[in-house]
Length: 227
Ligand SMILES: [Zn+2]
Image 1 (cartoon, helix red, strand yellow):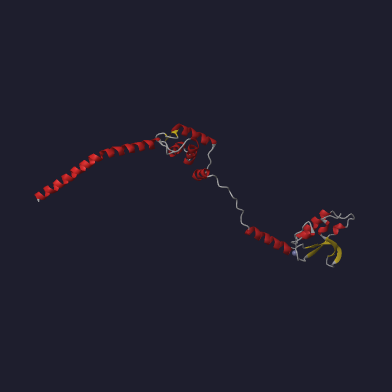
Image 2 (tube, helix red, strand yellow; image 1 turned 135 degrees about the horizontal axis):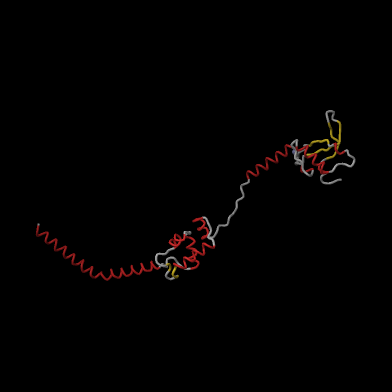
């Protein structure tokens, strides 16, 4: 018969009715530290000879007292009078308001992946990789020459409709530098050739400039005479 539940209340005789006669009942005491609040409750269902099931008694008391604003716990220390119960509720509420939302730390993705996400907000699928790889295989000559004529990361990306960063990533992983571009090599060669041609003209240019100087002086002489 005696269990944790049966010790939740003080079993005693409590006043009942208008005449205040004492009947069997319980007293529940507030379990908050330094609170002396207590409430009596007649529990006259006990008089059936074999006592009352502890759990049924607890449920009966809890229902009755909670209707009066009490919080009834499973042990004596857990009961709270309406005043203490409200104070605890407010404190809990204030605490949950003050508590900042827990920050979820998302580990930053590697630089390249971050760039891809920034550019297009989606990740490269295996199919994307396959398509880009095949295209690079077709238009990229080798690490020394780089892209074939007219091809760049940008052109491949536009051609396939994929982010440029994906093309760059796969090219760097599997092929070589973008700047090893065949066209750029040709342009450099052309510029060097043009420079050589211009250097060759230098003596002729000097000669022509010397003639120009002479012609200019002659013109000045003629103009003086004609004045
Ligand atoms: Zn209290």
